Length: 200
Image 1: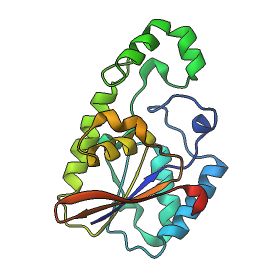
Image 2 (image 1 turned 120 degrees about the vertical axis):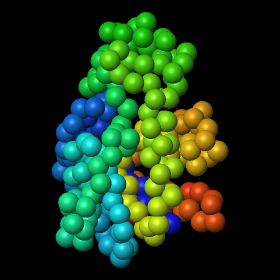
Image 3 (image 1 turned 120 degrees about the horizontal axis):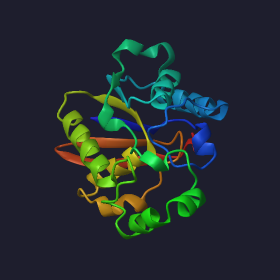
Image 4 (image 1 turned 180 degrees about the vertical axis):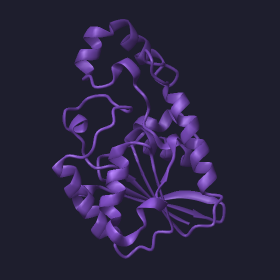
């Protein structure tokens, strides 16, 4: 099995360097340009199945990549691929959070895996739903799968591949429009390559 793991194209919140997961906006013009590069990269691949989160930015990215190559009605939306919900932290920059939620940010620094922002979810909560999704799809009989998701989700998948170790989350980057090629062969998962969008 070949799994093409794509982070959605740039959004305004990405450009403004704000924390967000649940906010649901589409792509910037540059984000659409990043999708065009992904489309060229994947144009010769026969995609059997497409998974996206419930968020507009992943759905739009998938549609821009696939164009007329895939029936849009067949794109599978799965809530387990949603980015972490940052609750009251949504739409704010880190400096704003440090000022408005000083105590909470201190707690976050001490326990980044288990900390829940007010009205949000912890990284641990997100990790286990992502893990559940990934364990499901590798059991299916598909040759080429496209997953369009979010930075936190993608890095969680990397952690799962790297011996199910959440602590490795900060050892990986995942930028807008990047694509990773994940292989599943002989009951073994591995990352064959991570390709930045700017070199596609």
